Length: 245
Image (tube, rainbow, N blue to C red):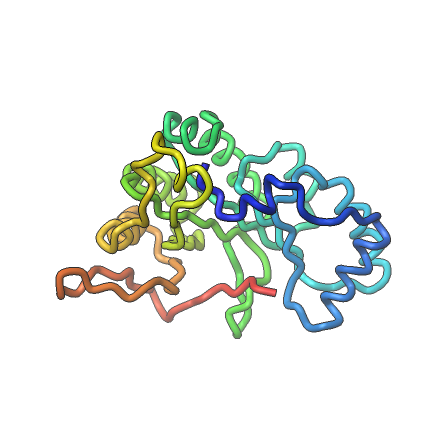
């Protein structure tokens, strides 16, 4: 409904490559200095990725591998990637089943995400970074703050802290803007706006109140109504996980 990359995800853009060509692409990325290989929404091509990786590793690929997903994956796919993927970057979008049905067209999304993210965490654990803040191994969960849906945010943060670990790295994101059907169809009018500054800062507080402390600090600097807002405090020093290529 609100996919911000709908041209790519729904209009069939891209080019097909065979396993050898994929291996060549991965090695080229390593050659130009990328820090990792980031596979975005890859579940439907996991077997082909594994085939290409076998060739690439034999030819010298050594970069950390990132599995970047909405978390609506099959458990089988995640099991296939056990011992292969270094860094999992799942979204945890929504919690309420009705919200999942309306906005994600998948009422079981939250249930699936809980299962998948728990399996990812069991494989690689909490996020580990090097001295430069580059992610090496572990899980980094992303949550996009949605307008009017802070109850979902609360439940997601409580689940992460209580079922994974308070040490889980969470990126609470403010990048939502109405796109695709959220912008054009009246039935989604309630999410046809950006989250307010108050909503975003409330989402950060919900994460902190849940016990989470490894929060990405790259958020907008907002002072609504001329008053300072709550910002999460670190146990020690700021730690930014950089998984950008």
